[in-house]
Length: 188
Image (cartoon, rainbow, N blue to C red; front, side, top):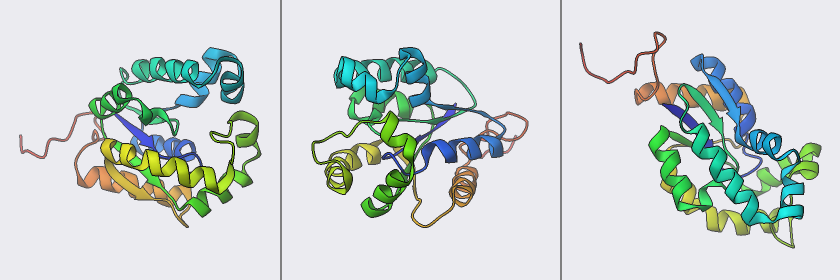
């Protein structure tokens, strides 16, 4: 089983995945970093050189492989939910946690992260908050379809978000206990 963090760019998936993995004693993987490593170039370069369909194909292949792992927290790219087969794979692998924030907060976080502009392309001609609003209109129902939990990251530190995720997973008994045995909610 694994836990996937989904949501739009700038909601904190990579940072929070690392913190959740530490709390659970699991491994963590940033799927976008894995894609860039395999391609030997940034996501922005993949889009520019090969086009979005080639990127989405590579993303689906990486997701399929990562979903076969156990005791891993995955930070997934914001658009991974666009393909139906990806949504099925995410849900089948374990609980998905949808990290949310307002478009204004997302825009501020993206603007504050210099690496984002270097590594990630604009997805529309407009870019900025206009792009975020347009993309969320399309993606929010897809995130909702995958999500076992929804966690609002607005005005919270990554540690607060991670703590909330770990607590809510424990409440729902959907993560492994310290001995590595899955909690079932039944007495043995």
